[in-house]
Amino acid sequence: MILDTPPLDPTRSEGRRLLQDELSKPRYAVEPSLWDRFREWLLGLLDTSGPGLPSWVFVVVVLVALALIALVVVVLLRPEARARRSATDRGVLDERGVDATAYRLRASNAARQGDWDTVVLDGYRAIVAASVERTVLDDLPGRTAHEASLELSKAFPDETGGVRAAADRFDAVRYGHDRAAESDGRAVLDLDERLGRARPRLTPIGTQR
Image 1 (cartoon, helix red, strand yellow):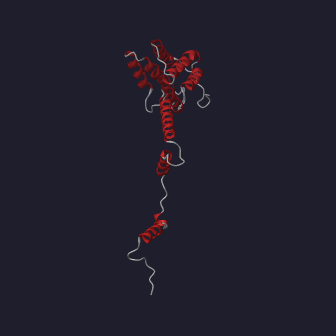
Image 2 (cartoon, helix red, strand yellow):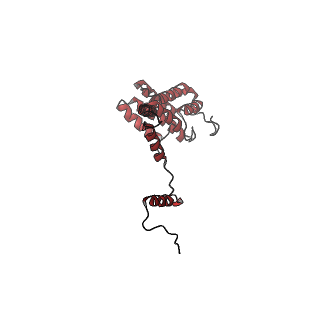
Image 3 (cartoon, helix red, strand yellow):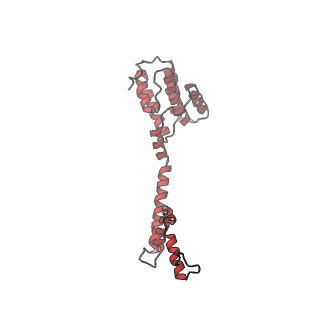
């Protein structure tokens, strides 16, 4: 009787064949990862014994790739790029739970320290927050400084010039990285006081566009 089993002491060629047969079974099939493929590609570039590219070409490709990556990182980290992303993602009142009184306090503290950039930013935020609290403006998330100035100009037509100038300085300091002068900060603080005393020309909420 002939048994269909492998020999107990196979020769070298028989052992190789048996190993190949065993490894060819589906359970041993492993799909190479992306990293493995990338590594094989790099090794192929470095292999100058065959028809592959010379090693100096690989070096040039790597240097160019590193230069491009560095350029992308520098561009993304530039203040202007960060400012553009912030300008599209965040409005004037981007801090939830901060009211007009808190913004005014921050602006006043900044004025005592001579930090006129913060005075312009928090002073204008105080103007917008106070207008929301007085229902002059509706509580609209993501409202920009320019949008707020258009609505405030309708509610306080006598202060149109000051409101729009304050909005322009807010955008210039926050997104354009301009430095505010003392006169800019004082103008925003004075505008906040005048608007607080003024009687707004109210229009029904929902029609302020």
